[in-house]
Amino acid sequence: MAIQIGNVCVDTNDLKRASEFWQAVTGYKVSSSDDSTVYFEDPEQKASGLSLQLVPEKRQGKNRLHLDFFTGDLDGEVKRVKGLGATEVASHDGWVVLKDLDDNEFCICAA
Image (tube, rainbow, N blue to C red):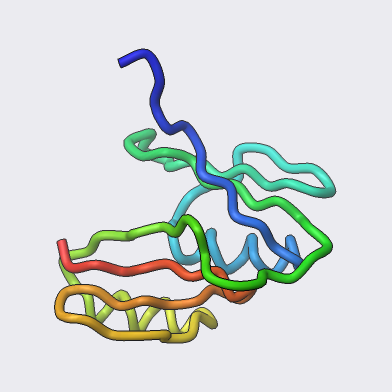
């Protein structure tokens, strides 16, 4: 295969607040930033990067793409991430759908 996912970008209306949230969720480190974008990288270089892009418009409708995070401690991680400001949308057998501070949906799944 000649290509791979190097980064996933998430839109935000508040770059500082979203940066703090996603850095706390992932444990990723800031690799670079400017006034409109923050790039995060996995400190162990084992996973794709994540970036945040400042946009003026609010999210409307259903996400067409979302992140799935895997963990060996589903209940613990959901509780931790909700403590960071995420809101729970739905709970299923083996995964929980949450929203970040900009209403972008993502899932935490049992590994």
